[in-house]
Length: 445
Ligand code: GLU
Image (cartoon, rainbow, N blue to C red; front, side, top):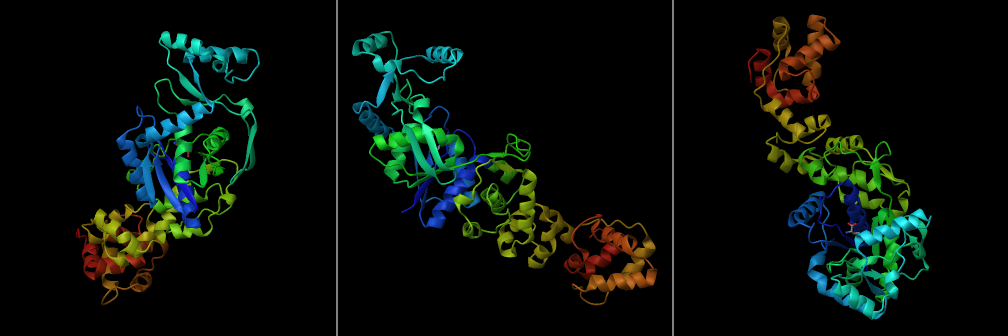
């Protein structure tokens, strides 16, 4: 069975870049009828916080991304310890005693001599006595995984054939001097134990994958299939700009007031061969989903495009979907109200202003008293309907000789107090005869 995971570190908030990885994994699992696991990569106990973890879960839930299972790495240190012992026994995990400064010095020297700054494996030739002497000095070992030095190749679901020359990599440190784990080993152990079949993540992990494939094989698993998607860049092709909040999901929700499906729609489609569109639900996104459609060049994230998708989504959003949210905003004016105002919305909260416009009180702007009187006189009889606006303005045109802006703008100002707003033809029946007449008389209603 297909099983994928999204593995954020709770050392920060979800943002458009890392949530895109969650979206791809989620859609991949749903499309395959498989499972989506949420793993919290909190081996860095200093920087991980419960608040970030809670925030990640809340943001994913808000986006409509649910998981079949979840766990945190900090609950599994003993399992990682066993895996580390196994690697030590195999001679694949070796103790190193260099300090950070010593490693830095080595790197600088290598570079000065025109060589790549790859760890020289000096620690491999330490004898037991050497190690005892170093420990007597008060040094504690960190532990490196011994790479094979062979090329590691795989057929990447996004990038096609990839080869990593492990001979050009430093043996990765799996365990720090203080005994804490870096991400490489726990991730592999968890992926094996959870039966992960596909690893979909950002291309900043491609080199890691080369090393991790060797760790998978050393621990007796075969590596899952990999897909490394290109990262997001800003609209201008440069680094993601921080103009729109911090591009954090929480800011997009709480400050910018955007729809979860707008974010889902855009992030699932940019950088693919599909056109970006506003999808009302995940099922719509699933239809054309295919990692093979992802481009290998970075996807451009444009906050303006996100706003456009958001508006488009609202313009076709059903009343049923909008209703609970409108109620929460105190802007639920019923279905006819929603249908009238939604083409004017950029964000759902804009509906509040329209609700106030309908419910009042509105202070009319009356610039010509005689036009207000004429307007009241020519208002069609009976209940106002979708036809009333046309009938009314035709009658006024005939009676006053006005046309265009002169005919329409004063009516809008008198009825709404604003120079812009929803289509008057739709608004008129929402206001109702009584309110219309009051406002035409200059009454705040
Ligand atoms: N915690 C890692 C990260 O956020 C997970 C990478 C992976 O998916 O394996 O980069």
